[in-house]
Image (cartoon, one colour):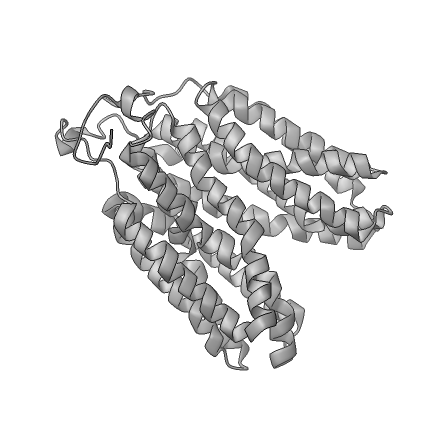
Length: 415
């Protein structure tokens, strides 16, 4: 049975039906985030550092400032983008964001030797970035699912994991074959060829016809009320601590492992294990969220991540490094599922994207702080151990905060 947006059978039946239109929205969203900011820009950025430095004589620090500009711009633009997503719907925001993002990446092929030109493009890419990432698609997906929302969001986030694994290799192959300008042009074209048509055809909200428009969201929480909610700030606090700790650990992990006598090849193996466990945990945690109380799932995954950081701080051998990488990967993967899932359960969909945008602001700022403070700690003491230990205990404390969250406010099934 093919269930389209115009047919209205019981939600308990259709969410398990492979022909349910919502699964098409999920697939399109997963392929969309694969070529969005979080994959195509973030994970290929390092591939272009040396070619840009060689072409223009820019320092690596100067090039890295471009990434920081994009990340901070994304952080501060996310609440506004979220508000627009709630007000105008995903299609009207995701489509122009994808178009601007794809054209901006492609136009990097025309970069001049002026750093301001590079920074201006990074600023533009950051401004529309979250309209092309999971935040842009999560609202559409969340309107189609209730009982299987965790799995649906996990499959969308899996697109990020797949993109993170393959896009750096594609970018490097293109650079080797035709140069960095052609690589930027091809990557930008990929956004327009893959992301834009799928979003146009499939990314839309579920619109139940049996409810008057004014009553659909009557139980949902306005965003200003959400910002005053104890539950919202628990979610933000856990996300902030996790972002500082996990992003800091990930960016310094290879350097730390080689400092401890582990070969660069084995350090790279640990990094790959981290990526694989991150992808696997997205799918597992999505399944768990549909079957168990979300804050308890979040508490367990955050504790696992804390164990991983503690192992990283104390490690002396490769097996411990592998275990640390797996635990940290689970933490990285699970937070991508848990945050949007909990927001829908506690605040509904009326202001979902606005609140999600605010969480992104805190996440991005914390993610920028983590590598800096860990790097500074190493420069000051010659070791990461003390700060990583503190961060591990901070994450354990943050995990316990999840147990303070009340029962879900929103029902688990649509009327």
